Image (cartoon, rainbow, N blue to C red; front, side, top):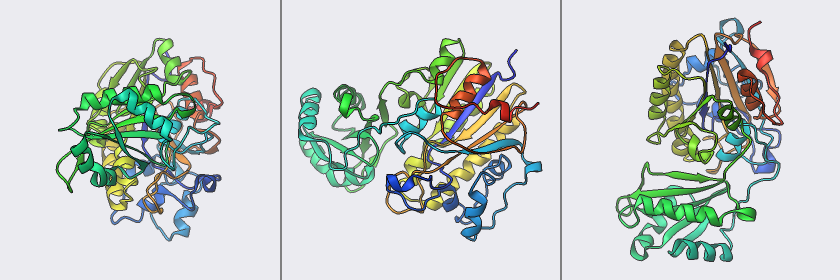
Length: 402
């Protein structure tokens, strides 16, 4: 019997822990998502602290320089191994980060459109979808429906916009365009956006309400490029269970999964489903994305809201840790940064933490800085004894108990 029966990988979407060495190449100055959260009143995450999040390389120095006094747990008190990961892929978005965590390193960045999509692409999209498109600029998701919502309702044209990430987003009011019709428009857009224009994600963004109080709904749906050769594929091919929770199915276009548990687009529901999985008998991987940190708080530069959300997760984490069995292991990590204390509204190019615990994992072991998110995939493959071609290097032998 394998040492590890079930592995839970929880991605705290956007919880970076300090600017990567190449942050300036991505338009970022000093940034540290976690450090910004420590400035919130009453901020405390004791369970994450016990797993070593404040003891990873660079955090103690960053906190001292910022005058923050929150103590990091001492190694003898810690219940897990910890490290920080540097992204090797040329990107700082959800798709790139998750794919690298799963073993794929993208040396060429996915296309972005700081000036909007070219006229020939818009023409092809309109022809395929059968509706006119308006806006066609990089935009905040809440601002774009405020500024273009009325025109959309009056004309029936879909709102198309992008961001600093490799995305094409289509927004529509649910009273004008049903969710399923919007999803179908996104499926058609996904077919168009291939090759040189192969954006990482086409995203449906339904909204409701009346101007100026439009609200985005929980009907968001991502249509990603299809990856291949991930650790998810390797586990599935070996007969393991591969369960996606939250956005995981969207991010991987369903590839490599044996089961998907969507969420109501909030962290609480994601953790509810994750805690429920602890009571199920499966062998393999539960891969969880908690999107609120990024979507609701990071992009809106809401330090207090982000900090509160992380404290709420920490409370759920305490329950999860109590429910772990001998054959279980837990990895907590992130896919990029989105520092609410940094200027602008875009993601930030940061290191991410990797916290690991379980009955088979040594406590208090600091693995320093790893050169790729893909080390996570290499480690998962070794834990379950499945073959995987990846640039990542496994750290399983470094964290497992002797």
